[in-house]
Length: 321
Image (cartoon, rainbow, N blue to C red; front, side, top):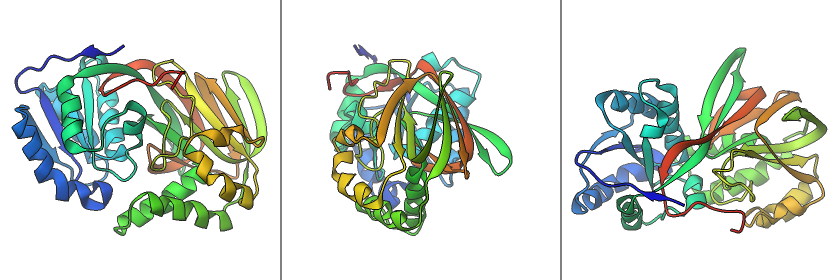
């Protein structure tokens, strides 16, 4: 059950990404800003200027005394704010709150929590102030020879999924965006992508296979509405895993429509798991995308921070959804 957040003066720090949704953030921010003013929200806002800017902005805002954040952007901006929250040591994360007005390409975290895509309705959700406490994932990965850490609020994708995300992100940088760009890259990547030999450890139990793609996360959607982890519950203290083993190109094409309702996991070449600690080794190395952001490569090590972040949303999905 959610609890209600009571408003107080000067509570919100709004981080706006003008590049989100192929510059939809820039175009629509004046409209969103007016809605916030019309609803008498007291806030300070700042605009990001470069990749990972929101991480530093978040930690700086916490030092200034802000405890409540609104993200005006997409999943990547949300991920940066989450990392700003969890990288700082000044304030316990239990004292911090995060809400979202989605202007991104995929807005997949919002899909799990029922956050409206309509700006007026999204602001109404913030005003209603229903709070849920969700799990946060943590992954250690490599960028060249350097081991790095990243927190994530939604899903990490490896192998084929990360290749598609990389191509899609390159298109975004060229001004091309939208779910259809993701679908196009999903199909186009089939012609060159090869499977990997993976060793996947889940709470100490090993699975060895030829893998096409692997998803690990706390929420359900990525890729603009594809239900990659259909059974994920964001506050159950477990990471959900979807493993797609070596699979034919034609099979991938025929299964695309089933990605949107999660029924693709019933295919015999696909397995789902749950666990708290996951390790992934692969040959050759595979790439990783985290909340839609292309970051690095294997090997990987995942764990989960149970009920670690207060989020303001419409609903928390259950096993019955």
